[in-house]
Length: 505
Image (cartoon, rainbow, N blue to C red; front, side, top):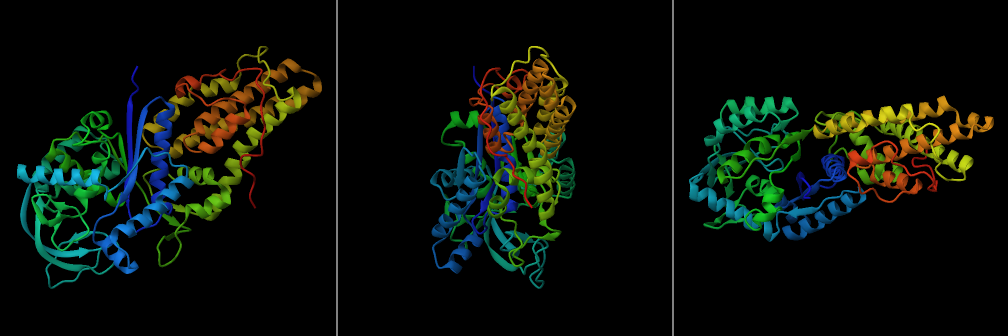
């Protein structure tokens, strides 16, 4: 029986940047979605990668005295190292300098030209190199970029235009018929409002740009940014090369992107797909931005949060947990050092870590490390609380409400800790109530097993440690089946380890 497919993507990251909390955030989010859907039995394809063409890269390479390709290779390795550190489980890493990608870019330009959706004209306007954004205005003005505040440069050269204006009404129809196409909802409303104001045709080539894909029918023109960059989502899954693979993987279930590039993904990308006759992705989800202790992160201030530095202090799983728990996905948030410490000590060490450690410690103390038989009390209040967990968590994951899913999981963590205090295993042992003590410890161990499954997408290393300490093999059943209460075999031997989250000062 074939498994359902699930395809999730991150943005592709510029090789003029370095891995930091801003680009780690959507990558961790996409990884959580990929891991969760694998647990649920899906055939998952998780794509990330790097955007390696353009004027920014060309200039950055010149500043470092290397070729653009050498510069890209150096930065790409840093991304590979960062994603390995953060336990990112991507299935593919696309680079826009790969032949498999460049061939598709040229194929799309040829299709657009032959259909009349691409035409030669002249571009005149102000251009922000760092943001790769064009601004309206006459040559006598010299506006600053509204996004980054840097000076812009005047460009005047022949260019091919994509007939974006042609797709204004089809785009509005798409938004109305598929209201989940852009999430969160307020982002969809922003996009619709701007599209209703009118669309201008889009300049998509440059003759002055060397580090880019040449057009097959006019080699002196090279691709400019967005057709090249956006195409990665289909070039990586076989478009134009492996139709069987492409039919299997496309459309993407969700593109996870930053709010700063929502326009390109919610307007230019679907218009381009319409122009080449390809089905739309199911969802584009725009996340917010992080500040650090109330201040915008910037290279000049040197206040970027570096995941490797935080992970060296708290552990990788704690970093993954915090960035998903601290704010609602889709809104802006502030990375505060004090909040990281508080959540770590309270929720990870105090709630989950304490539950796992004392449960296994008491099984070792009272039952020589063997999971007891719960026959005297086959059910308990924890079982009732566990029955709705899958449905609640699944609803949250489907809508990318990561923090809400963690809230729901932690309600169960706290309920299990309360159960310890209510049942008082130490008192039952003192009274010689062995059957009641055995049932109590079984139910606590079963709660720990279920929690290990639920936290696995967020904290895979900690989930693996829980499984091993319970003496269990890797789970092979779909998540919904694995979460059924009573799945922990009696009679197996636990192997308690060190606390999962030692408290920090």
